[in-house]
Image (cartoon, rainbow, N blue to C red; front, side, top):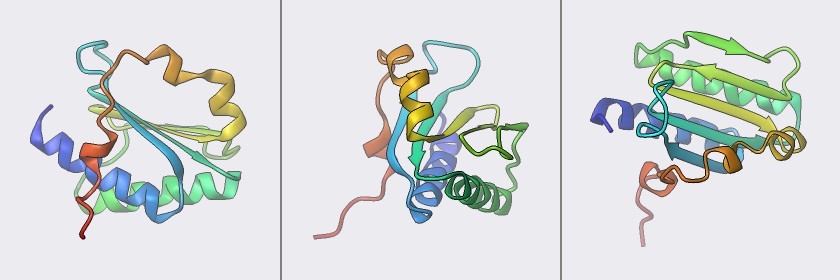
Length: 122
């Protein structure tokens, strides 16, 4: 995966975690589909939190000059999909995430979540 994309994904993960998203999962789908290089999934407790996570990701990436090509589901906030071309973000309320089961669909894609988080200090 390209270093620039990787850096952007690190910003995404940090922004999601700053707004208390949980069950983060980043998958490298570059070898599986031409849609994107990575999918990032997270869970939230409410539509308001989903919107807050989406807003924070948008703010952080806009500061880096990166803008979503498409955003869907923002008003309802049960599943917000943000397409940035190189990567796609899925912000789910937990019941929607379980119902659609994207982890099952893309389960053979490498999990890159840990690599995107900053190293823990001792």
